[in-house]
Image 1 (tube, helix red, strand yellow):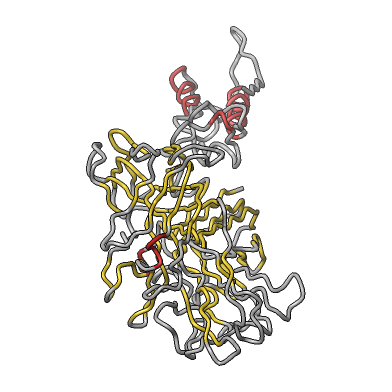
Image 2 (cartoon, rainbow over the protein chains, first blue to last red; image 1 turned 135 degrees about the horizontal axis):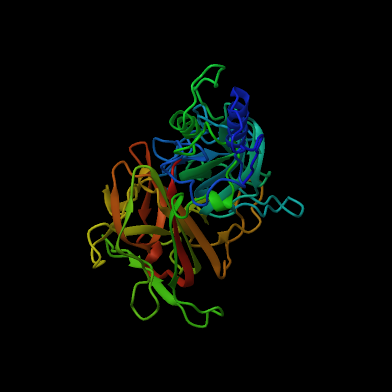
Length: 222
Length: 293
């Protein structure tokens, strides 16, 4: 504990205003500079801190909110019953695509600090035609690439599922204080010259789909 | 910053023991707050225990066998509606997470569940049988057609909880999760919006052999995925306080994509499932519960 003593009282001495004020100011100084060496153990708890003082968690059990499946690049061609309304080679524009047409995930009251972000879900990718006869090795491997961006900057990227399987992408980074928009994006490999794009019945071949998606974000300030 | 509003002692003030003690009392702090300690003053000793992360628990699920010399087998489900297979220890006892007298989750808390399992999918031989959803037909380049896999067939793993009592005899799907038994025309399955606690495993690995210029001149090739893992996560913030007594992982399959009335579904494929199976060994189920803020 820090201690300051400006004066020492002696028996029979006359007390002047300064004799008292200096001593009180010294003690005030001691209080205003309380630091981690002086604070008592175990005093930080949920009754002493305001909400959001240390961290803030953001979750969605279903994202996009409507039904947890991507709502961008949905095919509009003739579709067989045993297929999903999803991305196909006839509808995919190339490049990274948001999973949601909305404004992205807004992490409100972002005070700046460490961001932990988990994006979980399931992904369908059709790799049936990856081994084309006219394509040199390594052929055209099919992965559903996934990435997370924070204010437009990629903070996690994953090669992604190669089958119809569950996935989880985790980002961990520092983000400055201010408005924070998270976007979840996907990308697929374009078809080779050997890929059938339609079935013999004229139905389009489903290529990729993200579904059952949810996320967890935790901001830890400072 | 501390705030003390008493004025200083002035010349001519009458100073008594009582008035002097009052002034000293002004400097006595009754609480520690944002005014009297600086930012970032907290260090580990100052944090009380157990109020930020309010619960953490892990259990092993399934049948431990590192070499997969013995395992649990789930046969493909062909009788509808089908009950889910609870992940068990190989002796018929489900491996569940028990919360004893109950774990309370308040609206100000996040409940996070993570599970994983070592699995091996056997596709059987009915991927292109009549009634199976697992194939589409393509031009074979010689005036005929040839079937190719859709790559859509999966086994589903998902969470159930007991929110009734500690007997753990009242398992139901966790909030936002379907039991895949909704009737969709002639199928049983779930709409996509009710799969919040689902993680899927591919049921098959069959690819076209040297497709050429959009045709399939050769028969497709079956490959084995061998043993692999499945890993799922579920995030839950209740609207009102919930008490949970147990949590477990269950399995269903084979399921396949389906659409009807403009909506996507994941439905049971009973034809594909006829001689298919899913083997599994061990995994883990972990939960965390912490304050939202």
